[in-house]
Amino acid sequence: MRPILSGQLLLLLLGSCSQIGEPAPNVLLVVVDTLRQDHLGTYGYRGNPTSPFLDSLASQSVVVEGLTASSSWTLPSMATLFTGLEPADHGVMRLAGEGFALPEVETLASKFRDAGYATGCVMGNFLMTRRRGGGFDRGFSWWDDSVVNLADPHRGSSASAVVASAENWLEAQGLERPWFLVLHFFDPHASYENHGDLDFGDPSYKGWVKGGLPVGEVRKQVAASTAEDLLQLSALYDEEIRAVDQALGGFMGQVRGRKDWGRTLVVITADHGEELGERGWVGHTRTLHAEQVDLPLLLRLPGGKRGGTRARARLPESGLHFTLLDLCGIPFPAGPDSSFASVLKGDQVPSSPVFFEVDFQPVLKAGADKKVRKRGVIEKNFKLVQDLATGDTFLFDLGEDPRENTNLAGSPERAGIQARLEALMAGNRWWAGK
Image: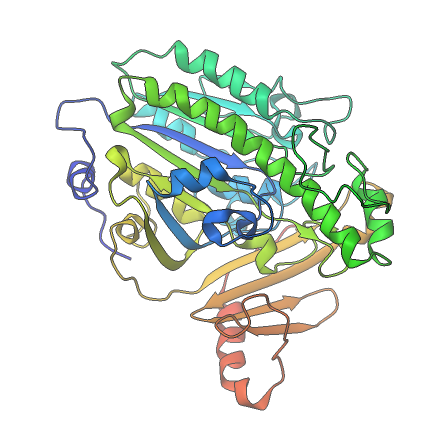
């Protein structure tokens, strides 16, 4: 997308308050698990008031439209964010055993640590706890996954606990040393809890949907669900988003109150999205549709530079890894297309293909319906997905059909486009595990 700029030059271009000799920018990286882009107000959602705080933050941020997850479930997606590698290179695509752990490479946290940062993380997802040994804690001098409910990790709300832990760590950080802090919220992930202080659901609803149902029970009901059932389910999901929004808004009060706020970069994103019955299923891993792989991305640059602007470009999740390093002036050996920092200051970029994939093998027999192997590519306004298990191909015109409801594969009018995307797919390196 551009040659790699020196850190100080790029900081000046983006309006950082840092000057030569002063501490580098702090970084607050927030990952909201299972957060659909299209359920946030700043991305046009008009259903329930899920994100008043995030929407207000968006007015001070660069809002990116087009960030694409490398996969539609947590481990491969977070491995991409933490390593800057695609699944073919980091190898993470399994819940356990071979293909579960990060390779022995530098992580985002280790690169910040080696650049002199204090590094901390509050991890709310049970798949990445330290005791599981996947290496996601590598490079963090402080790591807290005690907020995970080990008895039943899918139940309850941990947003307030994530914030409480983060507040304690941040309070202990001085002003002389920059810090890199990751908060991984889990709440929007199933089960979808009923939050008593919110009333997004229909009070007159009498159907099967209720808070806290195991996702397996929800899936049994979806095929025969009514529109009212799906609205109630979506309302519970929206309450989970609002719970995170409220907790994060409170935490940001502490961040804004610090004397180093003027040199703090705030980044909000997700690992993947969620299907809420609109295609006959609930959850993630099963598809590569927009609701699964289109990620939200808000970057509140130091000083609020370019706040309220939008960057529209199809970008790979791996690029966020290098963009954060780039914005903080931390050298990285990746090629000139790896960082998309130039996009944040309004530069136009050539349309490069973005690839993504899912190869999910459930570990329990009860989850056999989640087994899937799919690959996809987006170039310009067209998206191609191949289902390697069934041989089916799907082609979507994202300009005319952003919800991806009309399959154009096999259409004579789009034969040239399909052939070009199939050639791109054939030339790409994919995850090659068993």
